[in-house]
Amino acid sequence: MSRFSLFLLPAIGFALAGCRGWQSALDAQGPQASELAWLFWIFTWVLGAIWLAVMIALAAALLRSPASRPDPLLVNPAQDRRYAAVVASLAVATGVVVLVLTGLSVVSQRNLFRVEEEAVTIRVTGRQWWWEIRYEEADASRSFTTANEIHLPVGKPVKIILNSADVIHSFWVPSLMGKQDLIKGQENDIRLVADRPGIYRGQCAEFCGLQHAHMGILAVAESQQDFERWRDAQIRPAEPPGDPERQKGQAAFLTQPCIMCHSVRGTPAGGKVAPDLTHVGSRKYLAAGTLPMSRGNLAAWIVDPHGIKPGVNMPTIKLQPDDLNAIASYLEGLK
Amino acid sequence: MSALARLLLLVLLAFAGCQREERSFRADPVATESIEKVALVPLSPGPSGPVTDTSGKGKEYENNAYHLAQGKTLYKWMNCNGCHANGGGGSGPALIDDLWIYGGSIENIVQTIREGRPNGMPSFRGKIPDDQIWQIAGFVRSMSGNVPKDAAPGRDDALHPRPAENRTPEFPPVSGGAPPPR
Ligand SMILES: [Cu+2]
Image: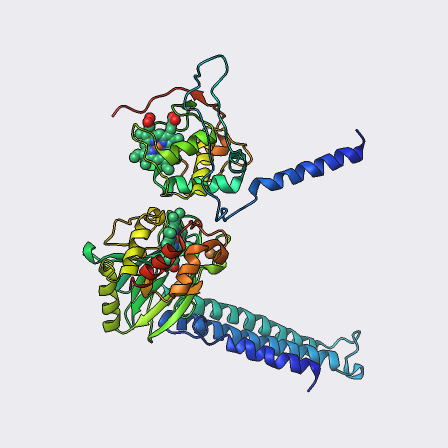
């Protein structure tokens, strides 16, 4: 094998591996994403085929032996007419291809933004550098706020209202839907459906500052029963801690600056500018997809958030070491 | 002055701007609250003014665009807005004017936020980390134009209720004012 193919083969392998997995527009898991993936492949194949045809024609023209080339001074009306016909029909074909592809994207766009009666409404507010998530119900007592993780029932249309609290962000869960911007002072709606249960990762897709790269979101698609169970649990306020260590943790948490920014429903902590921590222990990740949830990572985050996400809007707060462990254990238990 | 010297001076001047937005995210994790001995009134017994003794830390915050911008965000997040509105005053006194009941230097403002003041200003010690208190105090000074213009915030996440801080004319602090009647 040549040096070149030695290098090329793994590269192609890696590129294709990128098409599967929990964050890929080509691994469509719902009708909206399928629409986009379909459009992507149509464009790729049609344009790829045209490119190939042009390259072959060019190669043929370049490789033709000089002897077979006609004398440029010779006038041959029949041949000139033939050439003119070929060039004209290729020009028409180009126009047709452009028109057809335009038509396809228009139809796709309409399908993508077709309005269906939604089963769930989620308001997602972008903040530097995390996602505030509010499930909105007509019955206000069943509305609740969480962060960085949305759950959706499989097969049901979900309406997502997008808004920002500071700069422009963009909501993008590639396996479910294309990008849509979150803009302060404007509400953008998207609708999406997840066809299969699974966990799909999303990412802020509009540069929004220092920690833009660490602004991930998780979409968990699950059966209706699992979804209802999750929602009922999220609606409930935090359970008071049972064991002494967690009680100590709660007491420490409530006397620290934490409560100026964070809420834990069922306690006096009522801050509204940072992730709601009422059920933080039930989330799979911490700090917008930056660290897996665990007691160790909670403690690491609390003691030095800027070591993990430099510039993050959570200050370094001086804590006694045993308070730190107690707080981490308290938060981990908020399931 | 030769052309070369002038050029050199110009380059040096350009570099001086670099400090403006030097970002230090993490406050010293072991430092304790600095000691700021301030005077709340300009009066003193005897011919000399009141004796004050400050750590000098204030300059670091007042002249730095990052700290001032963070202060601006925190001013809303910590609900200073709730009582002082956007600086024009509500149940608390106005902060955009030149009148200060408890002194308008950054150290005085830091002490006001740390300790609280008797006629209705809560003490934020232990509620806001000290580093953030300094950032907010710097921002409060920018509301009356008392920080360098090139460091003062120029934008707002919402509509501007008044000209941005970097366009606010300077109102040097004067002793006076009174809490709004309740
Ligand atoms: Cu972003």
